[in-house]
Amino acid sequence: MHLSRLQLTDFRSYPRLDLEFGPGATALVGFNGVGKTNIVEALGYFATLSSHRVATDGQLLRTGADAAYIRGEFARHTQRLSLELELIPGKSNRARINRANPVRAREVLGLIKTVLFAPEDLSLIKGDPSVRRRYLDEVLAQETPANAATAADYERVLKQRNALLKSARGSGRFTEGHRATLEAWNEQLIGLGIALTRARAELAHTLAPFVAESYRGLTDGAKPADIVYISSILGSDFADEMNDGDASAAPASAPAAARDFSDEELEVAFRKRLEEVQGKEVERGISLVGPHRDDVAINLAGTRARGFASHGETWSLALSLRLAALEHMRSLDPRDGMSPILILDDVLAELDRKRRDKLTALIRDVEQVIITAAVREDVPEALGARIIEVTPGEAKVVDDEP
Image (cartoon, rainbow, N blue to C red):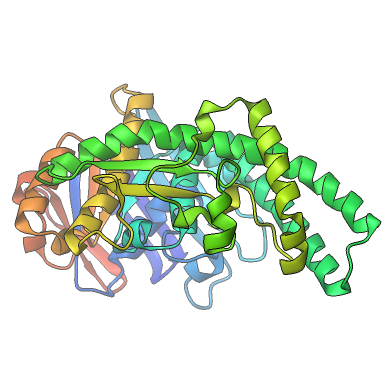
């Protein structure tokens, strides 16, 4: 698939913007701070209904605006698809599909697939487990929109359960009423948690060979890369002791793989873990076990990369995770015109010449690649990119054939 036209109204720094795109590579070139990332951020929003830079939609509106609009026209296999998203802080966002009546914004999930790599993605290797969980959840949401609903329902139940635990902690005693209500929330937490854990664990297992292959393609292949999903439900006794219930402190090899257990076995394990930590949960006023405490171990030569990988290895690993997501989604629907759109936001300048050339070789056959760069020299000539010059509040094509 590819984006053919993008229109923005009161989005970020743009009162109005109207840009035409095409298949192949397109480079948005301009100095830092002129609005290049705002453009690719808007495109990425169609796929995930979220920004890779900020946590709330209110920050996406131009200063003084009441709403923002993102409109895109796409070629998808043999279809033409028109999408419009209306972002309204404090209200439910709305969408129009092929100019039909407004629907809930989440109705567009799964229609457009993008893979976006940005400097913030270094946190996939060095950052908190929440970043790696979000990585999996974003891929799952694009793969099957129902996964997004499961994750949202789990977060809702978790919030209510935490409120109860906080209330019990504040009262200074855990009453029978607290216990009965907690058991009710536990039932929902277990059901949704098992579904989310299994989906993530299966995805991590599927992505692992793609990660290994991408990392080999970006480096000399001396250190094999691998990823392993670590569940706090299974065999994670180390977690409470080492990191307040957070599985990020786990060793490179997980004690048990969630995908190897039946739902019934996972349910038994989840109940047991909840019983084990109930006293600590009441004491701390927070839920200590469940997929919200899981992690993805990213390994180089069998050793956790977090804390050990060099700067170059960190960049290559983070990029490999995104390329793995791209290849996975391509494999789900190999038809022409269904490949996700690859977005590389301000990253080429950070790669040495060797890695840049290797990356170019890996992405040359992607249907549409959109790049942002400060200077034209950072865009590999081998990509044959169409150049769009971006200046404050404006963007225009300056070269169709560099």
